[in-house]
Picture 1 (cartoon, rainbow, N blue to C red):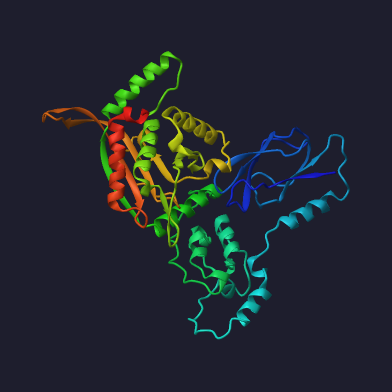
Picture 2: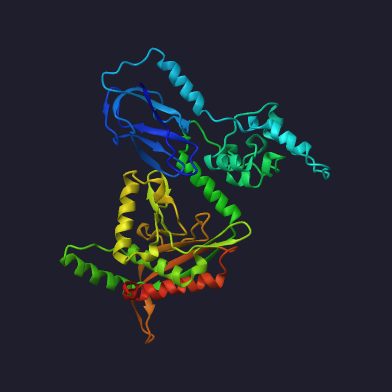
Amino acid sequence: MPKFIEMPKLSDTMTEGTLAKWTVKEGDKIAVGKAIADIETDKATMEYASPFEGVLHKVIVQAGQKVPLNAPLAVMLDEDEVAPENLDELIANAQALAAPTPAAEKKPAASASKAASAGPRLPQAPQHKTRAAAGGAALRVKASPLAKKIAAERGVDLNALIGTGPGGRVVRADVENAPAGGAGARVAATPAIRPTFGPEDERVATSTMRNIIAERLLASKTQIPHFYLQMEVDAGPLMEFRAHLNATSEKTGGNKYTVNDFILKSVIRAAQAQPAINAAWDGDAIVKFKSVGLSVAIAIDDGLVTPVIKQAEKKTLLEISQSVKDLAGKAKNKKLSPDDFAGGTITVSNLGAYGIDQFAAIINPPQAAIVAIGSIRNVPVVNDKGQIVAGQRMWVGLSGDHRVVDGAVAATFLAEMRKLLENPALMLV
């Protein structure tokens, strides 16, 4: 009997996926667990391992196509099995089952009944034009997967919203600002200023990941009241300590530590010393996390990913170093799983390797803080005796959510980081 390889749910916010490429072809024998395709989700591009054993009989979805969850991607047959005559019909039925139901068609009677039984109603403001009203009929809504998920949970009609994302795309902020149940629509924001380009210019379609990055960063900068602090750190003691530790470790064939390993450890220890930084805004409350989930920004070809070192406060410097190397390798080889992205409470972004002295990072929502690390520079400094000598300095910055973190709290956090980086032996205690 034919078996369908379907679009899997690879992240908690995923409602659709793009088949980036097939790594097998029709006629290939497939074992359970064999990587057969790369799937682009709202978080990363991941390898998809076959859930079945057999022969890949027919590819349904071609590379580059985007389909909803559970949509059939390909047909698998047992070895020597003959495909049934009604295979095309079976494929069509499977595609129909996976097709999303328009929000406007969901339970209209229930909404009408609820409105009728609500009793006397207060006067309402005039309704703004909706997408459906403007067009005369319900249209296919261009919305992000996360926006669709939140809309389904809150009963918001996406047809009633005017998107403020790229190309009129409905994003998370649009849904969250809409009345529950979809009763009415908010005023549309000023349309985005679109670029003018000529025939020699290239317009490149964005990937699912890039769209999500754009949506989350736009939401972060428009919804989170950022504030920024910078502090200069004497990196000389850190560089000297690291060189000594690596020389000792090398003799025994041990781990090679990077500057970033010490920075990550200092962030973890500082978050423990100042737990108010390890928190998040939750509407009418602040969530204070018991454990530190350290999100590490890693640049890849498709954009930026932030996998998480979970329960980082329980890890030694060696374990942190090994965890980062493992996550970076998985990111490069597209092996990151949804679990690798879960549980982040604070993020570190290090652009020092790119020669950037200092920068202001954008908060990774729903977290309340992100630490920005610049390069280590050889500069003239004034020592304790008032002499100008050669020194090594590094800028450490913090972007904070002012709803959660006060300036004094953030300053204390950075001061703790500086103490640890300038006395790195403390991080081994």
